[in-house]
Image (cartoon, rainbow, N blue to C red; front, side, top):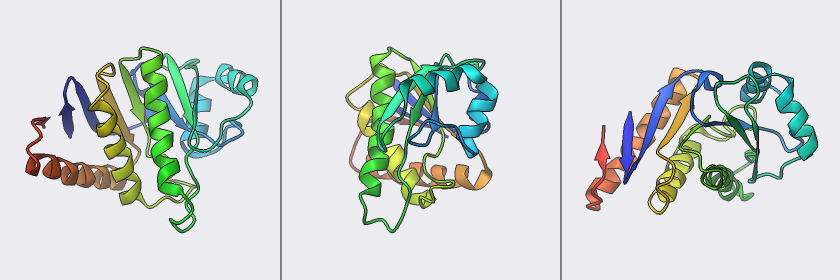
Length: 189
């Protein structure tokens, strides 16, 4: 599924983020930038030791923030590492921190003049964020950003399984319907 916001396109796809050819891919990292399981482990394995060497020099990244390294052996030129929140009960600022994680990645991409970026579903694996709410936050944050920043031409959400893809698609349909009902003139596919 695709959604066009001004000059930018949001794409939902099922796949392996480590194979993306976007200018940058986003890593759902831990605050120590120490590698780990899930997307983080896959990116470090595919990208090679150079990414970890850069992460060690950076030292860490607070929850809701983002840092950038080269892409190592990946097709993407850069990896933007962000730390999403661990979901506890929804009352500990989790939504604000998750929104910030996406926003800081987008800001870094704009600052580096990147034209394309691929995101995983941040915080929805080991960090336990409920997938529908996480998808809604990710998509709405991206749409809001693109409404005033057209420098990023393509933003992909690369979902690792069919269930995640379906939930993101459902949430994007809801947002699209809301935009249409409010007379926003965007193009939807």
